Length: 210
Length: 332
Image 1 (cartoon, each protein chain N blue to C red):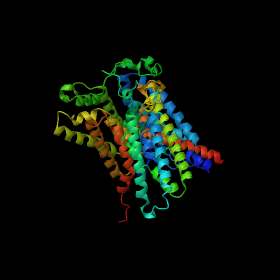
Image 2 (image 1 turned 30 degrees about the vertical axis):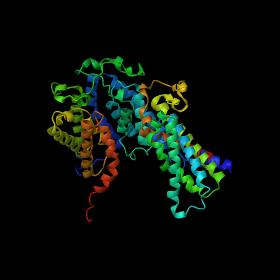
Image 3 (image 1 turned 180 degrees about the vertical axis):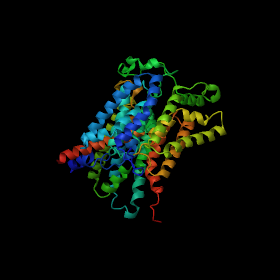
Image 4 (image 1 turned 60 degrees about the vertical axis):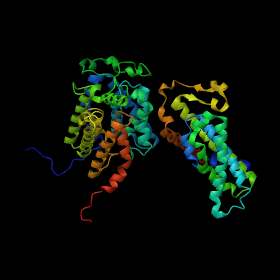
């Protein structure tokens, strides 16, 4: 059961590449690994909490009023995450900007609550939130790495926002960033990078079928 | 007795004849460009076009199409040519190859090959380079006068290999760049420089593009609709702006003679694939490209906006064609 859920979240029903849910942060914040990772973790957090808080009340939620109730719960959780990031790392909070509050409208959270947590007990719902979130985070990190490498010539830029100024040395300079391929860091680059990932994934799936 | 063709029978030109007539019409402007900027552009063309043809062949092979007939149509040749003459000749070779990759692979073959590409391939390559490498793409070498020695200086031919970075040399801003800078600094344009004292390289090249374009019209490769509507539109809209505030907005003739106005009017927006096919549609397309170009040049962040205007209007081509379908004779 857990194994299936893990496989679903990471590959078969990957939120970023197969369900194509949560595209707003996927495309907008992944200019570097740090942003992708931080937003991914925030999303995992929100997804787990929303799944395990809605799963126990699933019998009491009236069918017709479920979406406002789900959204209210999610919004409360996102506010917690938003304020926590602001308190823990102000520069990261500024870098992610509007996209932390926007986790509320992120369809992946509502989709998992609606499709899974409102029909299943707590423990599977917990694993669903965790694995779906991990799958999305993985996509965010890969996208961030691709765009950061090509567009800026660095890796792990701004990572010290997350883990402290002592770790500035982690930033790797791959080439002189004067002539980075700016397109990768701009919005069109996000679309091209995401579509290349989807292309790659479909190609692997097709090969496996044969 | 001489035998005459029947006048009513229209000769069907193959795609390759059309493409190579267009290339032929581009040659006078190329000669002017070599005279001003040196032989490097010729080396760029040789390298770039070979690379573009290889890319085209690889894509055709991957897509299981016959390679020879599609290579012979010359579309990749012409796309590469248009892209390479639009970028500064001092561009490092890898930047040029990136642009060609986006032109041929992304904007043409990813969309289904020639005939199915919604966007003008050369302009996609140019726009990718312009937004990705703004520093390199605005580094036009300075060209004071037409120099015949440039044709003999063969050492320049492959100088893009000498350095992978931007070739250091004397660079100067294009007239449109100077205007943008002057506007940015808030100087009145009339004091910033004089623009009709002598013809500069860009204006001479514009005249040669005009000549080449007229040749294409005489040969009936292109109709008058697209070029004339674009030129008139740029003329009209920049005239209006100049009348409103002559201190800030340049006169119409300046906008016609500088930048890519004539190149775009005769060679770029006349691309048969990505432009409208209906006659009224062509006029709408040309006018809108001109309007957007004038807006970008006068109010936007980039000195010349024709590439963006063409790509932007390419999106609307299906819509334009839908509303300009001519009535079939005999139907209401």
